[in-house]
Image (cartoon, rainbow, N blue to C red):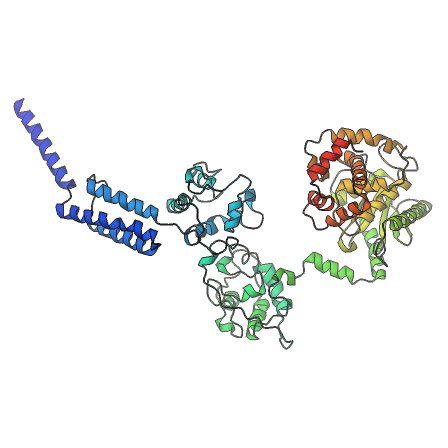
Amino acid sequence: MRSNLRLSLLVLFVVSFVAECRAAIPPEVRKELLTLSREIRGVTTMIRKKEVDEAKALIKKVEDKIAEFEIDPEEKDRTYRSLMSAVARAKAAIPVSFEREVASIFKAKCLRCHGQNNPRANLRLNTFANMGRGGANGALLVPGNPQRSLLMARLMTEDAAARMPKSATKLSDDEINVIGRWVAQGARFDGKDRNAEIGQSTVPPKKPVKVVEADGTETVSFKEDVAPWMVNVCLNCHSGNNPRGGYNITTFEQLLTEGDSGSTIVPGDPDNSYIVDLVLRQDPIKMPQGNQVRIKRSQAVALETWIKEGAKFDGGDPKATLRSLVPTEEEMEAAKLAAMSNADFNARRIEQAETTWKRIAPREETRSSTSDNLYVYGNLPQSRLDQIAEWGEAQVTALTGKYRLPNGQKAWRGRLIVFVTKDRFDYEEFNTILMNRRTPRSVSGHARVTNSFGEAYVAMHDVGDEGNEYTLATEKLVNSMLAQAYLARNGTNMPDWLQQGFGLMESKASKTSALFQAIPQTAGEALRTVTNPATLFDDGTFSPDEVGPVGYLLTQYLIRNGGMPKLAQYVRTLQTARNSGQAIQTAYGSSAAQMGAAFLRSGGQ
């Protein structure tokens, strides 16, 4: 028993001795660790003197020296642990550069969703100024306090659905540490311009761009032969906040600057122009990347020739966007329509009427009645079509007299087609086949006028000479439809409430008619469901059965509170405003919410 005890004590002694020998740091090493501890203190002074590079070099020197000793990272020696803590504090004290360190992370990982255009949660990170404005969820960060900063919470959360970047790999620990240290140090900006793209101050200034104007001797036109395919094939990747390869071709001046890959375009020297290699000479051709539309060889050869001839510009302003040089399909169609003669436009309307009717009721026999402003077309008796044309011309005269057009302009180029059906079923087919929508019982007609009068028609059902609480009599319906088409003659997509309200107002229907008598009750029931006054002016707030009565009261209210000049200004503003609410603000000087609330308080009066 006693011998076993002695044996156990001996084993314990040996193990302890071996562990102590293994863990113990030799005196000469401990002495050097103490020297390093004194040296690392110099980092604080260097940072205070803004000698950041020197401070980083000192930290690296100390870390390299420690590594030479091959000390176990778990070593408990007080001198070693104290030195390692001092090194960690020194590294944390090194100022984080927003432009050189943080901006590069944001550009690579965040700008896809939070750039200038259509940012998620209304948070733009493309400039430091935009970052300071925050987004829909509030301030992005609290300078000096990463624990209270939304930015750090969204980067570090374990909830994959809430973590940023969304639907992407979590940032590395080093990246999160860099951002966290920057926030803890006060989230300072070390660039030159808070409104410039982040990281811009670290980009070496590019050589001045020399734009040479074309003199007409060139065989290749940049505007006609190069810009169109560049805009349609290349611009998507080479524009915006983070253009592919650092090469941005938004403007001609930018097109001539160098991208990250070298001299992209060297005027007069296609052999040294990297872009020619990419689209013409490499095997396989590498641009455009992915499954995009390929550049035709003829287009690439035209680019090579254009560069060989000096890469000259024939597009006017080199600072303008390339997109502005290339007309869209809509712009080309508008130019085509503008060049058409009145006779060509009239012929176009006749062809449109016949083609459209064949889609709606191909077996129905049709007739037409032509007047100065209208082409009335349908399956009614000729006498009825002539009568509708007569009513329509009288209404056009009234509208142009009340709401005058510039000298020489007609209400609609090429006449307005007035489709009239004898059966409601055929009218409903206009909505089903052409508009892909159902037809509520209160709707017996609609108007459609597109940009540059590409299309201009109304479609309606001949309901007869007696109206009811749901629809106007045919003559008054014609008046209403033509008023709607007149209001929309510039091609602007008018809110439904305004079109229908204006149409009812100009229908010349008696206020004692069944439909007008029903307006207060129908509109009142609809308005009682409105919880947000600003939505009064938005499409979709009211059902098709409600929008006409509400629109009539709302249109009358706007006229009473600003007259026709204000309403006309509102209609003009709709051409450029983002939405109806913005147009209300511009025309009436009050927000949509304020105007809507005032209307509701008035009871529509």
